[in-house]
Image 1 (cartoon, rainbow, N blue to C red):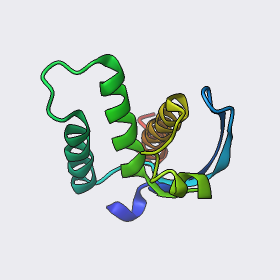
Image 2: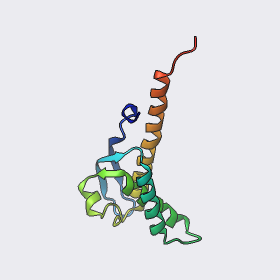
Image 3: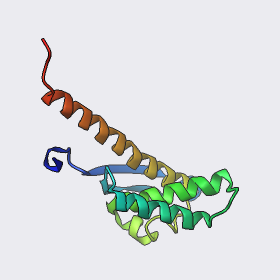
Length: 127
């Protein structure tokens, strides 16, 4: 069954200019388009840890926790600036992290679309 699934990893190109630093964040990332249950669990644990289990987190705190946990769960390999920033944790430009995490999430959506397309291709036609 799993051998017929679309490829779960993908290399994407990324480019953004830091809103605070003006740094040009460029590079290729190898990401996981879809996460296993164990990876999803670990991501949720990380998100909870980053939110410090606050009952009423601010929108900014919630957005940072989601972005960091998503990016860190999905990125397998990234450019030097990603590693040097402690895998996003030490970035000075929050919009860069949010954009990167959203790009990773978009790849999950695309992966799911390709799965539907693949299923439609092999489904018997009723003529």
